[in-house]
Amino acid sequence: MDKGTRVKVYKGRNAVGTTGVIFWIGDNKFGDGKRIGLEGDDGQTYWLPMENVQETSEASTVEDSGPEPVKGSKVRWGSGETEGFGTVFWFGAAKNGRGNRVGVNDAHGETHWFSAKQVTVIDDLPDAPVAPSITAAPDMPEGPSWDHAPDYGDAEDDEGPPPVWNDNAPEPVWDDEEPPF
Image (tube, rainbow, N blue to C red; front, side, top):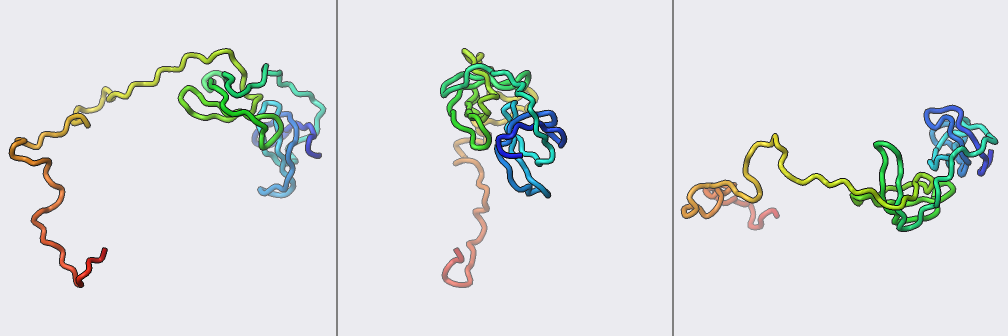
């Protein structure tokens, strides 16, 4: 098998049943034989031992997700609970594999990286969920806060909070004339 060969994963711990194209072949640093970089039809990159794949003539089963995103596009990725939305801030050729990669910023300012095949261009972003307000939890005990310092007694008698050091301690005595610092 060579680069550009269409293969299907038939054994291993992950990606069994995945089809794609080999884009990299090299020595297997985890054992004997060769290792490959596989660009799956699902847009994911897989790193597998070469003995886990077989040549196939099976055509790609992934449908075109629509127009390819460009910088500024609104996109959706994932599905169900792992679904996310954001705006493309970077678009360019993939470093590992074929195709393009996109950098997406979500509503919370977090950055996500995807293959262009993993995102779908949408017309508009859904309303962002409201961030929770920063308040004390209802089960937290009452106590001093940054807005209110504890009362140390009569303000006329005290110059401030009690010191954390001992003012009555004798001065240190050095063996030589120069202190050690």
